[in-house]
Image 1: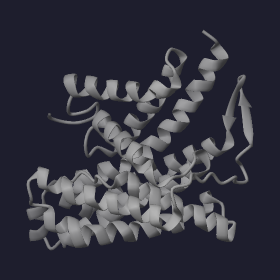
Image 2 (image 1 turned 45 degrees about the horizontal axis):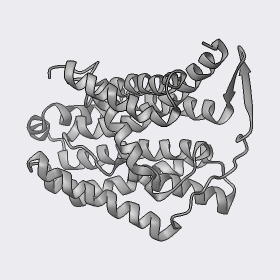
Image 3 (image 1 turned 30 degrees about the vertical axis):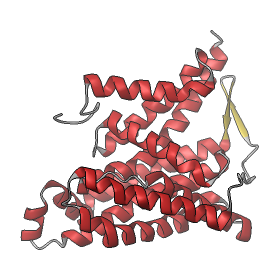
Image 4 (image 1 turned 90 degrees about the horizontal axis):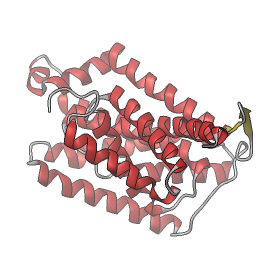
Length: 289
């Protein structure tokens, strides 16, 4: 085994895993508060990527700098979706919650197709060709910046939920909606904010991913599946589990290319999913099954 290649893949897996964790964080947050699985998750991320792309094309603002604007835009999108659709289906059976969110995902994907066309877009940012050498391994500066932002945003969400008054209200509503209502918390408003916050993290992940891969309207499906695998691996509704699951999945996909073709990375991902669901369906950091 080539040790330099292994080191290269190790770094690549860690950097990719941090982004996976951020992508899954929003999905896990929404599920943890409302018990709803956002099947439009990947498509919302793609909309965020397109917003960041056009800010870059029209204004020349790097995706890392437009991240706040993108997050705010996707926050508003999530807030509207929650207040207009999801709040109305919270008490429906789980099977009936799926279809409206799948429909929203299809609408968002086709909206992107209508507005921006089917062509792949790959912007060249200021750091596209910059690299750092570490122990014989080459690290893309774009990936390192994206990973750093992902970790910062993830821990900022943790601190917000633990320390802020709004975060405490969100945790109260997640623990017991009825009790939260009885003590004067507007649970519907908390749900709207929580869905918007989960969507905002997804938008941030989209802006960070933009310099790393070609953009197209159909990109959302793969990332929705990836987010599902990560949250199941870490534990549904567990935010720390989302980060841990993302790092594990990123490392597994990257290191598996030492033995398998890169085109088979999804075989590794879904293999991990099957194993975790068979032997620990509550996830690595989950509670009861």
